Image (cartoon, rainbow, N blue to C red):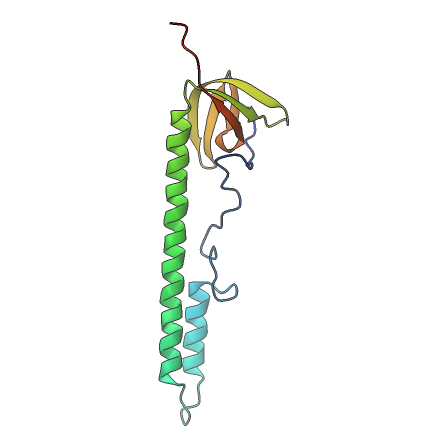
Length: 144
């Protein structure tokens, strides 16, 4: 069986951030780490000179903003995956060129699409090629 590698073609998603730390607007600190830091700061503050409530509200707003940005990034990754799936399905029956996993070029008609966790995989004449390796799509001509 062919090993599928990520690439840089029309559907590439290899460089996109993933996971809880995908977007860390606070210098690499995720939302859980930020919350722990804020709780520790409140716990060890000087009771005779408490923290400024305005600063605490700003920190809370930053935490809410960080969570919202992370949720937005997750939704965008999901939407991109759905767009790639639809685009790959639309290539069935089309004549395409793509980079093969061995470094060569594969040309032919897309016979089928298989969906994997890495993204859609096209079946071109019995050879599996990742969707993000497609370099050219040509219209097929009818003999009629």
